[in-house]
Image (cartoon, rainbow, N blue to C red; front, top):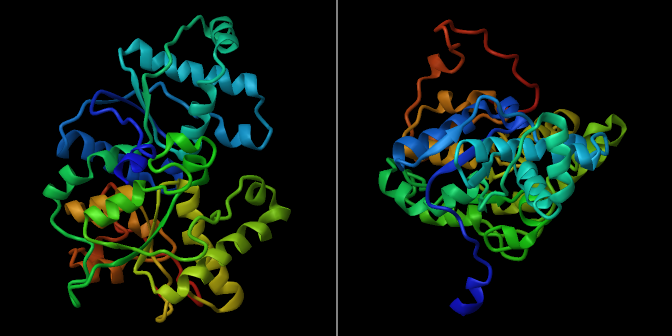
Length: 343
C-alpha cells in the first residue's frame, strides 16, 4: 500500500526558496503572506528571498483571455530571471493560480527565452523545484507542530475540531502530478489538519469548485454561477457541522467567506446552527493561530465571517479592543454589521 501511495507524493525542497507574492492574496489576506515568511524564517530558520522587483504572474488576465500566452510566458520568465540573478533554484509562488501558470510555462521555454531577451535583455534558468507555500508548510508540518502553543482541539469538549479542507483547482487539477496526493487524493491541507490535532470532514462536494472560476465572477452577468457553486458546497457540508473551512487558494478562501454573507442577505440563511456562519481561514492563518500569532496581525478582522467563536473553542487569547487598530495605533471605526449574519 505504501508503494502505491508513494506515487502520489512530490519533491519539495528543504531550503533556499525564492518567494513570489500574489496580487490577490495581498489584497484579500495581507497577513497570510507575512505569516508564511515569518514561519519560514523565524520558526524554521529557512532561507527565503523576497525580491522587491517582483510583479504579477498575469494569471487572472491569462485565464480570462485578456493577456496573450506570449506575454504571460515573458512575464513569468522575468520572474525566473530574478530568481536566477540571486542564485536560487527553488521557486515558491504564493498563489495557486501562479503555481499553475509557472508549472505550465515550464513546458514551453525556447520562444520565451527569445521574447524575454528582446523585451528587457534578461536571461533565466528554469527552477529546479516549484513548490506552492502550502506544499512548504505541509513539508514542515511536524516541525511546526513542535512549536505550536495550541492544537486543533475544542478545549470545552476535548474533541478534535472538524475541519473542511478546500483545495484550489489550479493546485491539483491543471497538473495533477504536481500536487501532494495528485488530483485524486490531495493531502496537502489534510496532512496539516491531522498533524495539528484536527479531524478532516469528508462530504459529497469536497472536490467541487469554490465558484470563482474567473469568468464566473469577473463577468458581472455570470456571478450567479459563482454564488451557486459556493452554495452547493456549503449545503453539502452543512450536515457535518464543521468548525471551520481552510483553503490553499486566495480566491477560494475569499469566495467561501464572502458568499456566506451574500447568501445570508439574499436568503436569510447561514450554514451553522447559531447564525454566525462557518469561519474560513487560509492555511497560514490556521498555522499562525496555533503558533500563537496575534489574530488581528494575521488579518482575521477583514474576513466576512468572524472568527472569535473559533478562537474561543481553541483557547486562543485576543484583545477585542485591538480588533480595528490601525498600524499607527489609532482605533478605526468598526464596520457596519450585516443584517442576517451574526458577528
